[in-house]
Image (cartoon, rainbow, N blue to C red; front, side, top):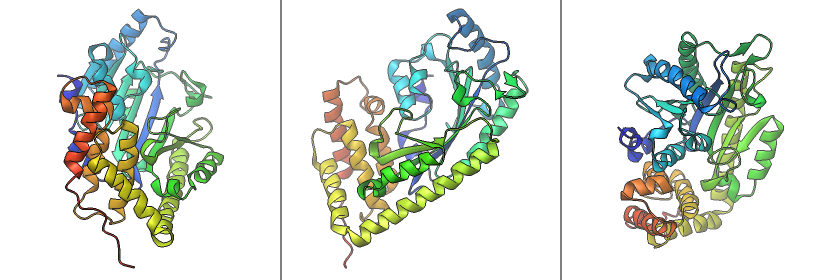
Length: 358
């Protein structure tokens, strides 16, 4: 079975709902763990990585939380499969570049995944829709505890869990929320919010993590510190800051609706016009325009258009998903044409903006 056969359909994935999902698209907790007495992946020779992978992979796949799931060596995946997994935030871009001696284990609903021999021996993550930071921590904590009974982790009584990168040392935890912030972008306040969050000791990154652009007005907020704080304290701090960002985004949307409605309608109306009628649409343009239409749906500006349709198109418009949808490898130019066909097919019959009567 290939990765594309196993994965949940884009439509089913887009239909999943969660608390505060008008702003919070997903919540994630990732843990970094290494085996005691085993050379870390970055310094290990290929034969050592393969041996370590063969030790870890069956243990992870046999865990009760992974029952009915999917596991594969990275060397068995095609480049398109790997890119699709990156687009779904199930593996990192770095792991997509791995081959022999690296692997992936997924549970059946894609809420739990483990990268074997990425930067660390194990990079496990739990992912849930909406604002579920505390729930997602409970999920990954239970899974980690079950693995620790089978695998001996590299742990120091003073430093905590030992990791390849010093920034993960201690708890090895990275807590993040994916936030849709078009309101703050449109009123030019997003940089102030990013600076404020950064001053509190957190990181703000783009759609695909460190060093990536905030396509579709989507930002990831995560903790910076992993040493000197308990997991519970880190979870609580991120939870609080995300709630504050949600409040700022909601206020920004109200400011636009009440104080700058024509500007708002212009942005959303132009986005609808492009997506419903254009014949060449790039990946970046589709994400940014779909983001504005999503804002319009959340503000009640479109009749009979559900957010799930836009979220599905957001996923299907990305390069690997689009090629899977079409069923063949495409050049950039071909992707832009097929993407526009896909978008027009879904949106050309949508009625225009429903402007509230003032």
